[in-house]
Amino acid sequence: MSESFEKHAVLVVETSEEYLCSSAETLLEGMVRLGRKCIPIGCVNGGCGVCKVAIVKGHVRKCGPMSRVHVSEEEESQGFLLACRAMPMSKVELKIIGKMKKIIW
Ligand code: FES
Image (cartoon, rainbow, N blue to C red):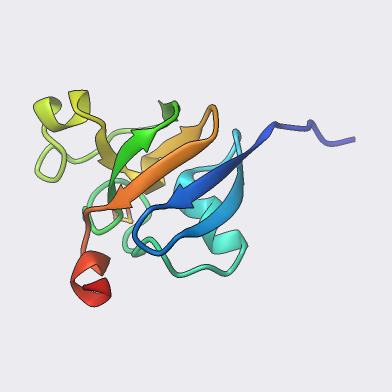
């Protein structure tokens, strides 16, 4: 029997897309699992910075190192992080800061 984890709604402010993401998977994994394209995908290990987002509402848990080249300590304290390195702990609203923003606008 597999362990069950709570699922949280994740809203991408720019596209108004919402998807469900388990508290045991990253914000990026949850999006990919549902076949959405809202957050850009790159290295998936915290190094390239393309999945950078800003948490507008809600709580997340960090799950691995993030490149300080892409997210400084000061930015992190302001809610910026990499979607491949964060898991939702509540309903989350986020804004895309990474490369995709150029495509959207
Ligand atoms: S996909 Fe490269 S840092 Fe998240």
